[in-house]
Amino acid sequence: MDLLGESGGPVRIAGRELGRDELLGWASAVAAEIRGADSVAVHATATAETVAAVVGGVLAGVPVVPLPPDSGPAERAHILGDSGASLLLAAGDVKPAEGEPPLIPVDALPRNGSTRAQADAGDTAMILYTSGTTGAPKGVLISRGAIAAGLDALAEAWAWTPEDVLVHGLPLFHVHGLVLGVLGALRVGSPLVHTGRPKPEAYAAAAQDGGGSLFFGVPTVWSRTAADPAAARALRGARLLVSGSAPLPVPVFERLADLTGHRPVERYGMTETLITVSARAGGDRRPGYVGTPLPGVETRLAAEDGGPVPRDGETPGELHVRAPLLFKGYLNRPDATAESFTGDGWFRTGDIATIGPDGWHRIVGRASTDLIKSGGYRIGAGEIENALLAHPAVREAAVVGTPHDDLGEQVTAYVVADGVGETQLIDFVAGSLSVHKRPRVVHLVDSLPRNAMGKVVKTRLTP
Ligand code: MLC
Ligand code: AMP
Image (cartoon, rainbow, N blue to C red; front, side, top):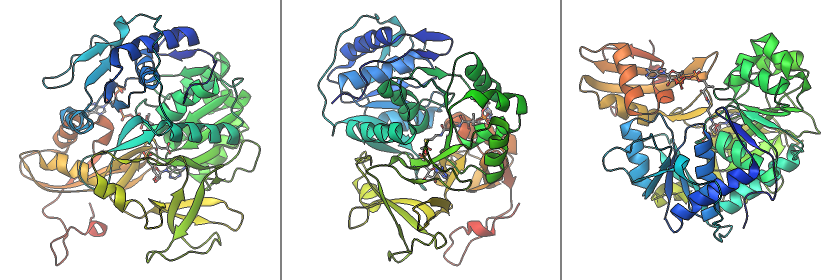
C-alpha cells in the first residue's frame, strides 16, 4: 500500500527547497541502499536529509527508527541496540560511534533513483521510541495502515487539502512533527515549510512570506506566540492553528483567538495511538477540550475497577481507545504490550478524561505521576532517575513533573548526593540522554520521603 499521495508540493527545510520529484528521486536512491534491511536508524535532525531518509524507508518498505539527534550515548545505544537497526542514515559528516551500524551518507546519494518495494498495510513503517513510567524508552511499532488511517482521518477532520501550506518547526522524531508534520503533508499533497526551531517570529514569517495556512504547534509554541502580539497577528491570514501533544491552557487559547482571529483546533494523540480525538475545521472549538473522536475511532472511560463511567462530562475515568490507527505493540516487550490492552481489546491510554453527552472529550490528567509532559515531550521519571543514579556521587533520586508556565510541566529532581552541584547534575543528564529530558530544577536533599515498604512517596516531596 502507498503511504504517499500521488502528487504534491515542495518541502522547505533548513534553508533548502526540495521539489516533489527531487525528493522522490532522492528517497528512491536511499531505498535502493537499504532494501531488504530489517530496520534502519535515521539521525533525525530537522533537515532535508532526514526527510529523504524517512521517505526512503517508506519507499523501500523498511521500518525507520528515528534517533533524536541530541540523544546522549546511553539513550542512543539503547535505541540502536533494542531496535536492531542495521544501517544508520545521516549526512556524511555524522560519525557513527564504535559499535554503531554503518553509515549511509544520505547527502551523497543521487537524486534520480527509481527503487520502490511492495509493502502491505500491516508492515511496520516506523519504530518510535517513547518513554514509559519506568526503565528505558520502548519502541512503538507503527504500521503503514495505521499511519494511512490516521492521516486520512485528520485530512477529513481538518479539511486539509493540497491547497494548504503546512508550517511547523517541531522535531522530526515523534508523531507530531514527523508522522503528521512530514508524512501528512506528503500524503495529502500540501507543501511543507519547516521553520527550524518553532519560534513565533518564524511562524509569522512563514505566514506572511511563505503562504502558510495550516500551522502545527505544541502548547509551549502557542503560549510563546500568544506572548508575542506582533507575531500572533501575522497569523491572521492562516486557515487553521492546531495545538496538541499536551494540554493547551485556556488563557493561551483565548489570547491566541483574540490576537489571531482563530480559535485553535485542539487534538489529542499519543505515540501508540497516533491522533484519535480532535476538534473539526468546520465545527466548534472549545477551550479546555480536545474534541470528539476521529472517523473510525471508538473511545470509552473506565473506572479504577474497570467498570463503566457515565458520559456526563463530569465523571473522570481512564480513556480507552479502539481504532485502526493503533500501534502493533512494543518491540521486544510482549509483557508491556499485553499490559497496555484490556482483556476485551481496548488500548489503555493512561490518561484520565471526561466525555460529555455530546461526545466532547476533556483530558484532566494522567493515571501515573511518573509520566511528565514538558514542552510537549513525554518524559518518564524512571529514565531520568536511572540517569541520575549513574552519577557516582548520587545515592538516591526521585523525579517528578512540576507546573511550569512555559513548558506545562518541568522535570524536577530530588537528589541525595555528596559533593556535586545542581548544574553538574543537569549537565550530566543532558549528556547521557536527550537534552530536553534534563531536569530544569534539582533539589539536593538529605533524604527522600519513604513509606513503610521503603518506597518513595512522591506526593510528599517538597523543595
Ligand atoms: C540547554 N541546552 C543544552 C543544555 N541546556 N545543551 C547541553 N546541555 C545542557 N545542559 C540546549 C539545547 O540543546 C538546545 O540547543 C537549547 O539549549 C534549548 O533547548 P531546550 O531548553 O530544550 O529548548 P526550548 O526552547 O525550551 O524548547 C521548547 C520547545 C521544545 C517547545 C521548542 O520543547 C519542542 O520542540 N517541543 C516539541 C516536542 C514534540 O514535538 N512533542 C511531540 C511528541 S508526539 P539547540 O542547539 O537545539 O538550540 C505526541 C503525540 C501527539 O505527543 O499528541 O502529538
Ligand atoms: P507522546 O507519547 O509523546 O505521544 O505523548 C502522549 C501523551 O501526551 C498523551 O498520553 C497525553 O497525556 C498527552 N497529550 C497529547 N495531546 C494532548 C492534548 N491535546 N491535551 C492533553 N494532553 C495531551
